Image (tube, rainbow, N blue to C red):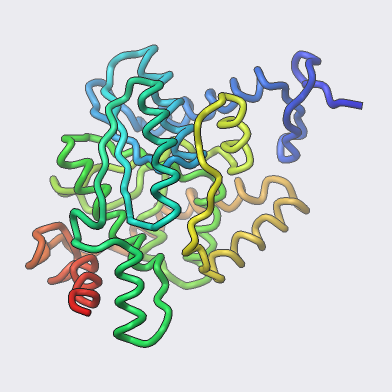
Length: 313
């Protein structure tokens, strides 16, 4: 027998074990929209006259984020909205996924911009990984290059677009995994930088990042994107081989299945103790990279150090 919505009795599309509620399409999407709007209001993520750039990829999370912010902007019209995609140059992956990002932007009438590793750094991620392996004789973790260089380009691109906010599509699962991974590694400095509006030393070259999807579980971002008929790709990056992050994800999912609400508990507990962490651990003062001029805590930024490793074959 089909489940019925706890609110209206219509056919349900989801059972939220952590809430004990069954929801139909209408009330599920209403709930997602409400959570995102509440997060934006509570943390004052978007203010009047903001220029918001959304980091998109063609995946479910960023596609949903762009759609929900578009809905909000259409109603309120007090902020501007644009989209920014970073093309790492992963053959057979990014060239497929970015077509969905372009399609969604065209459907919504949102300006689309693209920055690439090749144009900015002179090499694609594929080329960097190949050079690293050839020079040093082992398989490099591509995520080390990708994560650092993507963050660099997102900030650079958003700043050049004169954005006041950079919206990134981290969902509840992403946050819970990152929090627990930082605990296990003992990386308190990275933990301090997390949050709804990630903490950093204020500097005119940093664009403020916001995470409107932080309260939405990954399964729900997927379902919402499907129900809204958004164009998106479910393709997984071929470089996703980080066993540690995968183990953390599997452990949290196992606990969530057995004890519904664990993911929310991880994030809420972290939010309560983060102020104490901030008072104990102060980030290093901002300097400017001697090579590229971007803000960093060191003499040479991590991006330039990584690029130096693959500078010559």
